[in-house]
Amino acid sequence: MSKTLVQPIGQKRLTNVAVVRLKKHGLRFEIACYKNKVLSWRSHVEKDLDEVLQSHTVYSNVSKGVLAKTKDLVAAFGTDDQTKICLEILEKGELQVAGKERESQFSSQFRDIATIVMQKTFNPETQRPYTISMIERLMHEIHFAIDPHSSSKKQALEVIRELQKHFPIKRSPMRLRLSVPGQNFHSLCEKLNEWSATIVSKDESRSQPSVICEMEPGNFRECDALVRNLQCRLEILAMSVHAEGDTQVDQYDDEDVSHPSKESADSVPSHLPKESTDSVLQLSGKMPKQIISSGDGNAEGKQHKCSTCNAFVGDSKQYRDHFKSEWHKHNLKRKTRQLPPLTAEECLADMEISESKSDLQDYSF
Image 1 (tube, rainbow, N blue to C red):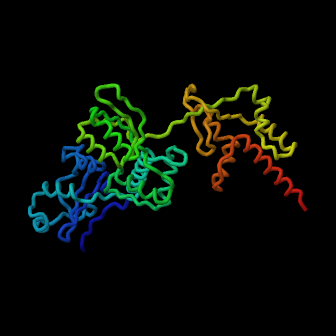
Image 2 (cartoon, helix red, strand yellow; image 1 turned 180 degrees about the vertical axis):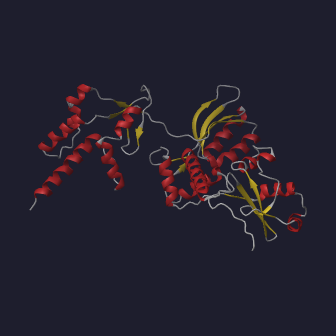
Image 3 (cartoon, helix red, strand yellow; image 1 turned 90 degrees about the vertical axis):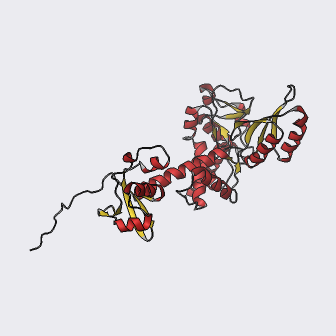
């Protein structure tokens, strides 16, 4: 009677093991490593090989525990030194990861790429940067595929070039300070005009004049070469420049809420009937009044802008409350229909007209 090896059915093997596989000369070689240590070794963070390898042994199949034959090792690697072979497999081999781990890595890298794209671009129509969620949605629309072996920054530049073919998106300019000897200052200014750079300020009072400008990142290499030839000094002030708001929000107080002002009554469209106008004024007394007025940007605290309503809505608390308002919800519905946003007064009037039409439809026979 033959004896068979009996193993427990619920046995869990190879826990906390990451397999690195390398195919060479038609043969498969594997090594058993600790999880999260392979990437640390390849990025030169981990220096101790014993902290990376489970054992200095080369397998043909780690999961089954089958060791690689010595003649196969000599034929593929030219040596039977297990440690040297482990180092080569660790450097050139492919890390085997589970489906959930691979999905987590892809989602993390996808988020990193979207963040870099957001930091380096803006919408030329609004002069404002896109949000990360919008960048991710645009990346899904162009069916961008992530390459796990390529850096996030390199792929982000590819995403920007691809998005520019389909959507209104531009690279954010770089802000530079260039200091140049006096005899070369005019030639530098001519070159900046040729590159369509925006000159923010000039300082010609010193012995070595300087200029602060904003230019496209694609011209930076050429600008750096010019600076070296003219013996200038280049200083990067900002890698990407986004437009900043110069508007001020006049916040409402409790007295204005209970008594609508004359300005709000005048702002209601004149073509509405008197009953509709009265109801609009009543609604305006219930909703927070957010009036946008031009200012010098010296408002206290940071002003938050709602891109959907195209309006500044005050500090963080008022910004959160704004997203719960009927004004914002109404503009969201208009945005899905590719319609421009309405002001608070126009929104109240439009909502009243919609309600009147729905009432007429309910009573129509």
